[in-house]
Length: 464
Image (cartoon, rainbow, N blue to C red; front, top):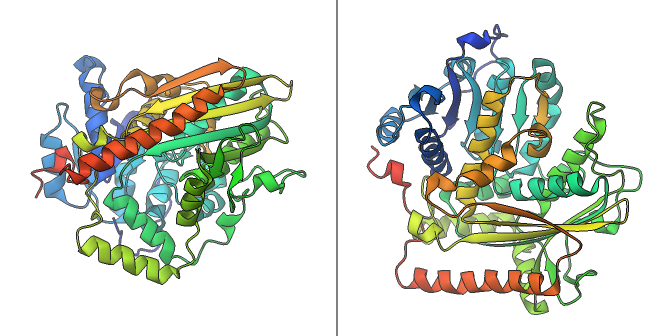
């Protein structure tokens, strides 16, 4: 969604809460991820008695597609045709929360944040675009705090598992010395994710995001070797049979966790503290060094960015990669899933670990962001304004419980979070890697036999 280049709007009067007749609006509802958000929210609301349902809406640029999506819902979302900043601001004044599913966020995301802050409306997204996140924090954190607008970034699959696991371990152990996460996932890609990757490669604004503490959380003893991004394959110090490589969420996830640490540390009104000197490490484990080295190469290509972008565009033209609006269909999403094991040591010396299991990453993003939006819409107490992480924004709420309560669209694999004493067993780590490899082999075989790698979302199948 590209809004017209307009001068900054004059400040608008913050609407009376009574005038906000909608709980939330999903912006970008006809895109792939946005349509999954619509599908999940519609399913959740349809399970409730009509008298207790939230009024909600969908928004985007193409009125025909929006009306088609709305007609396929069991509940009755209002349709907002949004093509410029004035319409966006008007929509923000009519709802408590906007879920932003438009991307790349670096191209068209700031206008939405601006409209929300200007109207004291809450905001939530599923971004993983670090340079954009750095920019949004710098420009809007203080303003959002003054306006009591909660701008919640990265509430999707790229960071929600990390935030929930680390938060749960801090609640159990108190301030931490160590947080280590072993991330394992198999899945496909959507056209929107691909477009965001292309936009990131075309951007020159990367220097700030290479700092491990670019989102906050730096202390005097940071800048340790373990704080840096993974640039070589090493045997894990806790489980030497595991070789560590970067996970797809290593960069964004670790920085968001450090921001959560900083936000809680700065909040004198809570005793939830992550630890002054906690080290945070997120990696993907492999049982063979060669497999870890192969993955490292994928994250550190020496090809010029221009060549990588040209190769992506050529593959998309040939049909080997998806266009925006397309992603894994429901049957293919059943092949995908994730298991994340997090291990922590408290400042007390006590150890504990937590385990996350889930289905397709895009379904996780829909469930986590919709659950968060519902929490924001229902908040009655004074809000923690600012540009926030999910863990800090949803501290003391039902967000984690909601995420686990209802599977995607009430028809898929439930998300599960388990908390246990001590360190995980070697068998648990080996099983995690073996299960990922099994899923990959099975999934690739089914794709080769004709399963669709991507398609339009079910709510958009007959869209104009």
